[in-house]
Length: 429
Image (cartoon, rainbow, N blue to C red; front, side, top):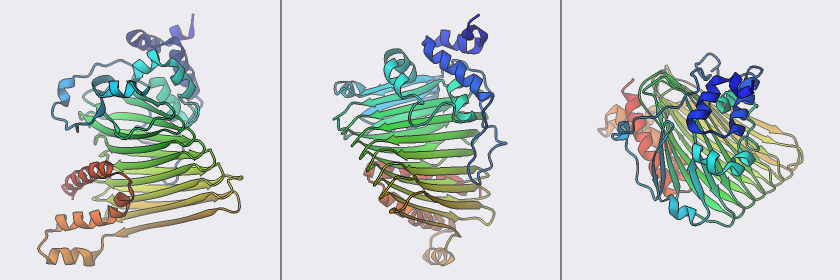
């Protein structure tokens, strides 16, 4: 009896999706490893009792694409839309293929680009057996995206993706993205995560970015998964010599979430700019753990996080800058600030600097505070009602992060999402 026959759930899924045997074997290894692994630990984020582990069986589901008719999807030159495990729309990808750029869903990646998946999937940015959540992710993975940009290729128009969780039934949303950028190449990428349906579900989303020497990645995301979705969101980058990544992430989710964002500056001169905006509402808990590790000499790692907390919600920012021994001339800076608009809100900003070498630059700033009463009084004395005045104060508070984002189209996306999240969040107060 083969291993695959011993695991009928994996065997059935492989037969339904024509999954290659080598990936089914990897699922089995991850499933076996998961029995001996533990949940990862993040400072001051107490999530262990959440329903964050993947409990639903591995199954293929065909989502009803008519449910997307009311969902607003922005027009984009290069666009891919996925609903659950179903690819709904692809626009402008042929013109990218003419340049050697690959953009395809997970099933196509396994079938047509096995060499790339084998080489990069959970090999550099993160390992499948790192902890219980990563192992479960591989064992239950059902959807995703592969993007490959060959060397000496500069894209000016963003590749835009919409990943829509199908929460109309009790299935886990297990999604994986690999973005590989060759030497001397540039790519802007815009990712949107959202939910259709109201079932209580679990989401496990991992993104791996492999930035080769002298490449530049502009990674932007607007995340708004549903109120009844408990999420593990892991985004990792592995940077070569003189490579750069600009992370711009809008954490607008409505459910409980652990965000694990790491950048490994491996090559000399590598540079990571991480900008996070988060808004928590209702009774939700968002725990965001952001880390930059300077391995190479003269590497630069900057973290800028601003968050707003309404009603009875909780928001935790961990910022970790780690300069490894041998990383001479490295620079690690971070700033985490939280604004609380309710006496029942809870916030925590935790800066950590780990310095293992001399001749480096490092610094941090952190604050947790209430909304400025004088600003509110001034605005309301000019005839603005309280909720509008609050939104204006919040916009001013988030302004420094938005201003630091190097792209107009990303800023516009985030501004619109922030306004919608704030208006919805104020209804709970």
